[in-house]
Length: 519
Image 1 (spheres, rainbow, N blue to C red):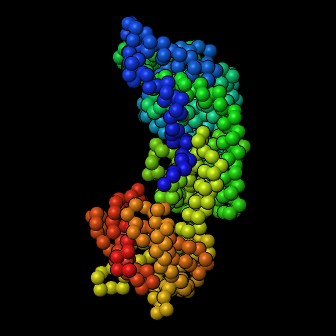
Image 2 (image 1 turned 90 degrees about the horizontal axis):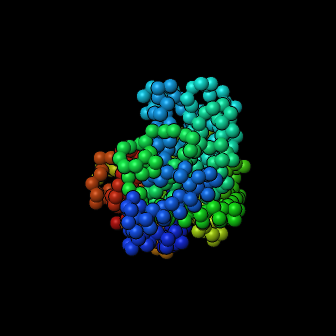
C-alpha cells in the first residue's frame, strides 16, 4: 500500500541532501569537537559551520548566540528555567498563553509551585493572544519573561510575534519564542521581531530527530540546565551530536532558501483540500484557528458527528496518515489548545489535524480528500455492552451507534423481520422503531483497506442511504484475553468477533474485529 503522509507537524522525513551531509560524520569524520587533534578540529569546524547556518536562517547577529540542545523541549526548559532561576533573588514573573506546547506549560506549572508568579493568558476563538492585555501584565521593575510560540503546532495559528517583541522590549521584559513550527516555513527574524530567546528543532524542517537549538541573545543571562563540561558556553554541557548538528545546519539552510516558493505551493494545496472537504461537508466542517494568520501547510478541522480518533484509525487503514493533534500527547486527553478556543469536549474529540509538507502532491491531496469524505460518509458501526449469554438472542443485547438523519445516534434492535434487515429504535427519534435494511457484502476487493486481521467486511446500509461498514466493535472490559470469540449478530446471520489486539480505545475498552465465522 502506498501511504500518503499528512502529519508534517509531528515530524518530517530527513531530506536526502541532509542525510548525504550527515553520513561522513558517522564514519571517517567521527571526532569529538572538543579534541585538539585533527579529527576533533574537523568535527569542530563542521559544528561551527552549522551554527552559522542556523544563525543566518533566523537572523541572529552572531553564530555564538546559537546553543545546541537535544530538541525544542529541552530548549524551552532551558529558556524558562534558566532565565527565571537567574533572577530568583529579585523575584520573577512568567507570562505565557493557554495554547503553548506542554514543554512550556508544564514548566510553568512547576515554576508556580516553586514560588514564581505565573500568568497564563487566554486566546480568542482563532487562537490569537491579545497583545494589549499581555502588555498590562508586565510590571515595571519586576523581572519578567514572556513566552509565546510563533505558530501553534495543532491549529497553525501564527501569533503577532513582532508586535509582542516590540512591547516586551519597550516595557523591559525578556521575550522567549518557541519557533519550532515556524522556522523554515514562514519568515522569522529574531532581530526584527525583538526576540531574546528562541527554541527550534531540526526534525520539523526535514532534519534529524534528537537535535535542536536555543537562540540566546548575547546580553541575556541564564542558569545552565545541568552541570558538566564547558560546552555551549557552559549552558548546555555534554559532547555534541556532530552528525545531527551537521544535518540541522544543512536543513536550516535548505528550508530558508526554499521557504517562499514552498510556502506558496503548500498553501495552495491546503486551500484546495479545504475546498474539496467544505464543498461536500458544508456546515458539518469547522476550521480551527485563524484562516488569515496560519501556517501554509496546516489544516485543523472539527467534523460534526465524527470521532476524530476513529477517523484517524480508519484513514490509517486506508493509507492516509493524519492525526488528532499533538504527537506529544498521543490523543489520550482532550486537546488543551482546542479547549482554549472555547470548544466543548465533544467538539475537541471530533478534530483531526492535517499537515502538508515538502513531499505533498496534488494527487495526494485529492486522494486524501476522497478517502476522508468516504470515511465520513460511511461511519463505523460500534458494538457496546456485554455479549449475550449462549441461549439468548445475540443481536438484541447490543447497542449500536449508527448514522441517522446525518446524526450519530444510539440504537437498539427491537425485531428481526423474516424478510431480512433490522428494526431499530433510535435514541432521540420519537421512540418509534425504524426499519434498517441489511446487506451482507463481503467485497473482497476492499479488504486491503481494512485493519490487519479482518477476514470479511459486513456492510449495513441505513434507510437514509448512508453506508456503514463494520470494521471493529467495542466490548466490555471483562473480555480482555487475546483470541476470545464472542457471537456477533447482523440480520439473522451470526459472525464471530475475535479480540486481535488492544487498540488505543477509550479507557476500559478493548477492540474486537469482525471475522466471518458461521457465515
